[in-house]
Image 1: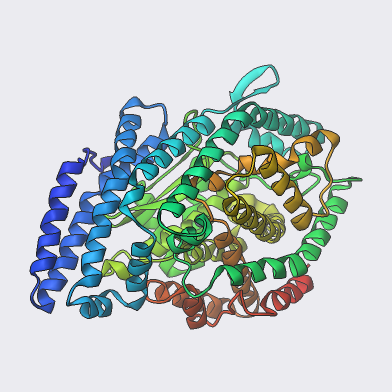
Image 2: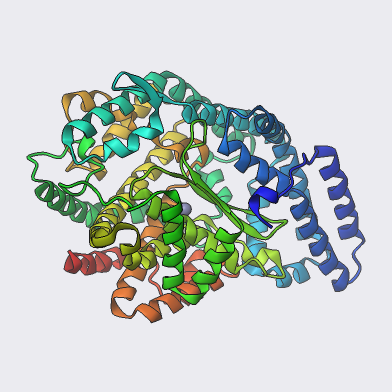
Length: 555
Ligand SMILES: [Zn+2]
């Protein structure tokens, strides 16, 4: 079904509750394995019944000022935690059922572990806190989606400044950059207040559930299976040791290429003296090239992209009042992925289609999975699907950029390295913040400023930037919306680089190992799935050192 034909009707709490009650009864009455299988199917139908909630999220994001979907979203924010409780009760009954061994065998050991860790990370006593958290997140979305900036005598949307921030003309990018940060400064008080409330809310959730801090609770919620906070800490230390020097030399390479004495933050978006490569056409052109790109990558991705584009399963135009950023989600009732993006006419248009396309491709691969739980995944897996796809897409960038395809690839690789540092910085920041929820706003900014020195010691700041560089974390939506969803990108990027290394040795074999990785997800933990695809575990000592040695030979 096409996206615009997908009907929307509110699913009420009462309807959902009645369906859950019937499901609980079926589960408790199950007396043989066939009954249990029927219970799983009934649960699938219930999940499909909740699809309007996902449709509403997307349509609300397409225009946060549309009063209808804003109202619907407020309703789901309110009932969401109570629905979560019903869902949890189902899993508790399933885990405690006399047929739990059968359920484990059917959904697979990995999904069953996810169910158990979900139970451990949940308690009905925190529902009021979760409702309050949802309301804070809606307030955050509203604030950021409607952000304006003063630019050249006009009040423009802040997101529209991205293009000029990448201008080859240093004066233009400096002006656009300063307009953007002035706009962030305008919202600083409110952003700090929302974040403070979020941190305290989440700390309280952890406390009520008996965890030492929100860090431990979030490890359960993020389903970090097969590694612990200590592994992540070691990984971050490896990143500091091996990646900071590589990133510093890449920064120096960019400075020379740009012919500048010093690189300041306002130069951060620019990689070439003539400017970054930009797509050679408009939205329709980019979608066309996306189709050709995925057709060129492999027969599997070719079928996938036809499926997506022929059904209009995307919204990529940038508009006032549209939620910023991009993501991929899915509509379970129709077994379709959906891609949300904001085409701004920069190289991001191509980037986002390759990244979100990787997420969409995974959903597509698993869409006919009989046992839906066998399509489950954890965040580092999902980002590996997406970031590795960026590298499989890279050789086809001439489609978007003509003769500047090679420039895109150089820029993409440079960004990939600094992204690992940036995500580790965010991870360490969050760990420190949630371990000490009582820090003042100023102390939080000081933590960020200190980490900035650890991860980006080579960066230069103007006096103006120095004054507020401790508040730069406020520009990162993930810190508000998806706490601790940062290290996943760093781990995934390391794996994506391993795929890039393999591609340089044997393209076809690399693609087959990517498919093997995707198929293994849903049935294995992240470290196990990497093993299946013959990839190195990023936590293994030396794995980063080896990878950086290879990278140096490519630069
Ligand atoms: Zn992603």
